[in-house]
Length: 226
Image (cartoon, rainbow, N blue to C red):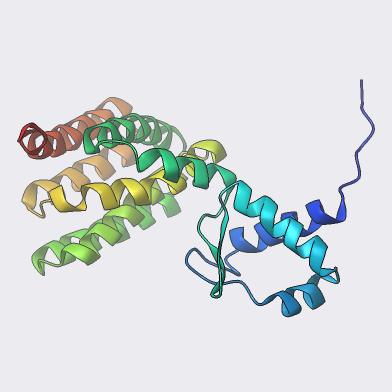
């Protein structure tokens, strides 16, 4: 049975618009929102309505109010806020195991659904990985590696998986950056992985994921045991 639509309160409308603007990149993570007067004029609402909307977004973890400094964006969605909070409590090994599960499903679906444009993006970022490996530039390598895996996730054409990956993967990469080794094995792994996706060979693609996750685990396990 179709239920009657519920009208949103003014507070809910303002909170929803602020969240949409954050998701669209108008205000990015770490950025400060305009002052109260500007926001009140922009949304055409009273101070009380605006403050209630901001309190609601603080409660779900999207915003943080710093007394005397302003209101700052700390997450792009409620999902992002929850995941960030949970990941901060996880060990590096737990994070790697989660990445393992996500990567296996992402590459499997990418093998089924990738387009030629998807493959071009993967090759672009893989070439950047190789370039930054040769230059021994870890920071840029990690960024290119992130973009590569994001491109693979995008090729799954599963909106929920893509959203989960986007929210999780940056935290995952930051958590394992200290264990990342830039070597020929990483470059070869990317080559084999992209070739498997090109050939729509899901078994080989999943094998590539298993190999590089195993490699990371070999690096971090001795450290965890110290």
